[in-house]
Image (cartoon, rainbow, N blue to C red; front, top):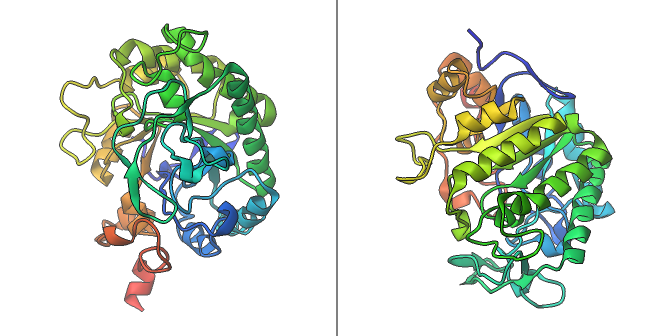
Length: 365
């Protein structure tokens, strides 16, 4: 039987085990969207996982929608990421940058021109959003992207991917999930365009495939992953018939020979369980993609091992348990108890709840 702790190759990236650190926004970046120097220790502490996926990292100034999140599009930001990658690699770890544009999940406070963010259609996301000062405000109706602007954003993804490699990242993950820009184009609740980027499934998939094509050409398919969320409606981003859409997307990604496909589908009876009536698509998407497949969704050690045993995944990504347990791999190997996560320190703040969770070794000292 394949174990969670067996190595696995994701394209050009050799993972020491099948446990990935899921992308976790921590809102601790410093001025100019530069990673916090504490992130060197934060990520190095967790380098025993097979793959670290960075916190969502914006590809451009207009791509930001949350306070104190880092970017990967300026030389200053690259300089901030380099010591993080050096520290992770020194511990034998591997790390990819999750490339992020929030699209309509932004407000004018984040935009350099003081106007609302951008989206595929003039339809506001649902709910409220946190401004740069960490206070809440209502979502705004986005500006509609022109085809020329879409082409420019594709190049922003390319630039960010190249900057990620310059910083030392082993690859990139294109964030096409959770109601952000690419997901907004995919789903018909947020995309009501009547041009070649809207309407049919093929048209709504076009933007994602243009991004993947361009990024693959820039850094190689074997260093590129894609993350999708077929069954959640984060930020009010819904599709009327997600089954055909996401099976088409998975099949369309197959020919690229990507490093992996990363799918969010909450396990039943866990806090991330998909809402009633939403289809379970991950297994069919794995078959259609026919490449390295990573599953995310409230997985415990037992559920993670079962997903691999059942052939539903090659790897699993784990969020909060890795946040609260820097040595989660060792704890799972030895069935040691886990630390209790402090939700009050998830977003913003300093070292507390960030780099001070004890390991088994420090707890015994």
